[in-house]
Length: 227
Image (cartoon, rainbow, N blue to C red):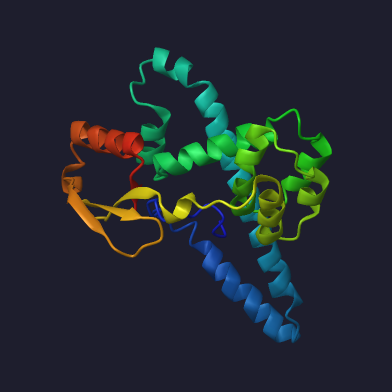
């Protein structure tokens, strides 16, 4: 991945020795570029890394969307937890992020109002940029999708969305709940740096499946962001 899927709410991943090979590959491609006195092999390698990360991000969004659509089937087979809980435990992705990616695929790539040719071009955008489109796509706003598909970066997409929906101001007044890694819960208002401590959850006891399920449910239902 190249960072498109990262958020402040997601857990770190455990990297296997075989996956660490990518860092050796970087060293090798840099060495080859130095031997050739040409940075282009390294730049091409980096370009491919970025493409790979973006496509995998969208593939994950589709995977979560399709899993969510079939979750009732899995529940009939004995799964008790909601999809957000399972994804959090098995993949380290927070419930909030899981929902964002499900909505992204549903609202944009399953949206019949968006031309197929546009969707093909959107595959090349970062997930971070595409997330700017979900609300507008869901609400059927009159967005020029050709301009969106030809936008060079997220800033251009944001400007196109704002041109239709107008600026948003709720971020200055909204109350958000957050949790430190040690389980400390606090609230913040808008962009203010001030924290209001609420309490503490026993995250150190999450080896217990009941406690783990309860905490995950609290986070999901309460919209708590895990830092």
